[in-house]
Image (cartoon, rainbow, N blue to C red; front, side, top):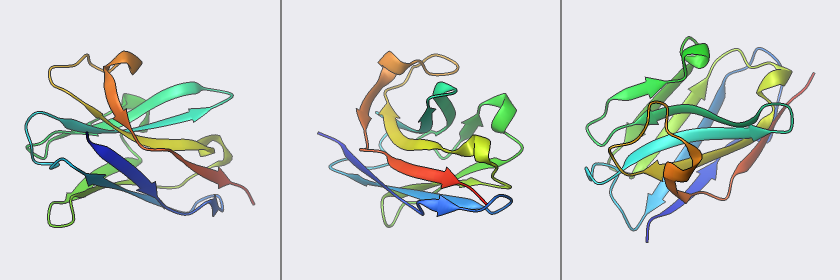
Length: 126
Protein backbone atom coordinates (compact mmCIF):
# COMPACT_ATOMS: atom_id res chain seq x y z
CA UNK A 1 0.00 0.00 0.00
CA UNK A 2 1.33 3.41 -1.00
CA UNK A 3 1.94 5.81 1.88
CA UNK A 4 2.31 9.57 1.59
CA UNK A 5 3.48 12.16 4.13
CA UNK A 6 3.40 15.92 3.72
CA UNK A 7 5.85 18.28 5.34
CA UNK A 8 6.13 22.05 5.34
CA UNK A 9 5.67 25.24 7.32
CA UNK A 10 2.58 25.77 9.40
CA UNK A 11 2.45 29.56 9.52
CA UNK A 12 3.32 31.98 6.77
CA UNK A 13 3.06 35.69 6.06
CA UNK A 14 1.39 37.16 2.97
CA UNK A 15 3.61 37.44 -0.13
CA UNK A 16 5.89 34.59 0.99
CA UNK A 17 6.48 31.43 -1.03
CA UNK A 18 5.06 28.15 0.24
CA UNK A 19 7.12 24.98 -0.15
CA UNK A 20 5.55 21.62 0.67
CA UNK A 21 7.10 18.20 0.20
CA UNK A 22 5.39 14.84 -0.07
CA UNK A 23 7.44 11.75 0.75
CA UNK A 24 6.14 8.57 -0.87
CA UNK A 25 6.71 5.11 0.63
CA UNK A 26 5.96 1.65 -0.73
CA UNK A 27 5.71 2.95 -4.29
CA UNK A 28 7.92 4.78 -6.76
CA UNK A 29 6.89 8.19 -8.09
CA UNK A 30 8.21 7.07 -11.48
CA UNK A 31 5.89 4.03 -11.54
CA UNK A 32 3.45 4.56 -14.40
CA UNK A 33 0.66 3.03 -12.31
CA UNK A 34 0.31 6.33 -10.44
CA UNK A 35 0.21 10.10 -10.78
CA UNK A 36 0.78 12.44 -7.86
CA UNK A 37 -1.47 15.29 -6.80
CA UNK A 38 -1.60 18.29 -4.52
CA UNK A 39 -5.01 19.15 -3.08
CA UNK A 40 -6.16 21.57 -0.41
CA UNK A 41 -9.24 21.96 1.71
CA UNK A 42 -10.67 24.96 3.50
CA UNK A 43 -14.09 25.75 4.99
CA UNK A 44 -14.55 28.55 2.46
CA UNK A 45 -13.60 26.69 -0.74
CA UNK A 46 -14.06 23.04 0.18
CA UNK A 47 -11.81 20.49 -1.54
CA UNK A 48 -9.68 22.11 -4.25
CA UNK A 49 -7.36 20.29 -6.63
CA UNK A 50 -4.14 22.21 -7.25
CA UNK A 51 -2.19 20.12 -9.74
CA UNK A 52 -0.76 16.75 -10.74
CA UNK A 53 2.63 15.29 -11.59
CA UNK A 54 2.68 12.28 -13.89
CA UNK A 55 5.11 9.40 -13.55
CA UNK A 56 6.83 10.74 -16.67
CA UNK A 57 7.36 14.11 -15.02
CA UNK A 58 4.62 16.09 -16.78
CA UNK A 59 2.62 18.60 -14.75
CA UNK A 60 -0.89 20.00 -15.04
CA UNK A 61 -2.51 22.65 -12.87
CA UNK A 62 -5.84 24.16 -11.98
CA UNK A 63 -6.05 27.11 -14.39
CA UNK A 64 -6.65 29.69 -11.65
CA UNK A 65 -3.51 28.57 -9.78
CA UNK A 66 -1.26 27.88 -12.75
CA UNK A 67 0.50 31.25 -12.57
CA UNK A 68 1.55 30.71 -8.93
CA UNK A 69 1.93 26.94 -8.52
CA UNK A 70 4.76 24.64 -9.50
CA UNK A 71 5.14 20.91 -8.84
CA UNK A 72 8.54 19.26 -9.02
CA UNK A 73 10.10 15.97 -7.99
CA UNK A 74 13.23 14.41 -6.53
CA UNK A 75 13.32 10.86 -7.80
CA UNK A 76 16.33 9.96 -5.66
CA UNK A 77 14.35 10.78 -2.51
CA UNK A 78 11.03 9.57 -3.95
CA UNK A 79 9.50 12.95 -3.14
CA UNK A 80 7.45 15.51 -4.98
CA UNK A 81 6.96 19.11 -3.97
CA UNK A 82 4.61 22.04 -4.34
CA UNK A 83 5.76 25.64 -4.63
CA UNK A 84 3.07 28.31 -4.34
CA UNK A 85 4.20 31.88 -4.84
CA UNK A 86 2.84 35.08 -3.33
CA UNK A 87 0.55 33.47 -0.79
CA UNK A 88 -2.42 35.35 0.65
CA UNK A 89 -4.80 34.56 3.52
CA UNK A 90 -7.03 32.90 0.88
CA UNK A 91 -4.36 30.18 0.57
CA UNK A 92 -4.97 29.13 4.19
CA UNK A 93 -6.00 25.48 4.06
CA UNK A 94 -5.08 21.92 4.91
CA UNK A 95 -2.81 20.74 2.12
CA UNK A 96 -2.79 17.09 1.05
CA UNK A 97 -0.80 15.00 -1.36
CA UNK A 98 -2.60 12.09 -2.96
CA UNK A 99 -2.16 9.52 -5.69
CA UNK A 100 -4.37 8.76 -8.67
CA UNK A 101 -4.26 5.90 -11.11
CA UNK A 102 -4.32 6.88 -14.79
CA UNK A 103 -6.52 7.47 -16.61
CA UNK A 104 -8.38 10.06 -14.56
CA UNK A 105 -10.67 13.00 -15.15
CA UNK A 106 -9.48 16.47 -16.08
CA UNK A 107 -9.34 17.68 -13.35
CA UNK A 108 -9.32 14.58 -11.13
CA UNK A 109 -12.40 14.15 -8.94
CA UNK A 110 -12.30 13.12 -5.26
CA UNK A 111 -13.25 9.49 -5.87
CA UNK A 112 -10.18 9.12 -8.09
CA UNK A 113 -7.72 9.88 -5.27
CA UNK A 114 -6.83 6.47 -3.86
CA UNK A 115 -4.04 7.13 -1.35
CA UNK A 116 -3.78 10.31 0.74
CA UNK A 117 -1.30 11.87 3.12
CA UNK A 118 -2.57 12.93 6.51
CA UNK A 119 -2.56 16.60 5.52
CA UNK A 120 -0.69 19.61 6.83
CA UNK A 121 -2.26 22.88 7.97
CA UNK A 122 -0.93 26.01 6.30
CA UNK A 123 -2.06 29.34 7.74
CA UNK A 124 -1.29 32.63 6.00
CA UNK A 125 -1.58 35.60 8.33
CA UNK A 126 0.15 38.90 8.91
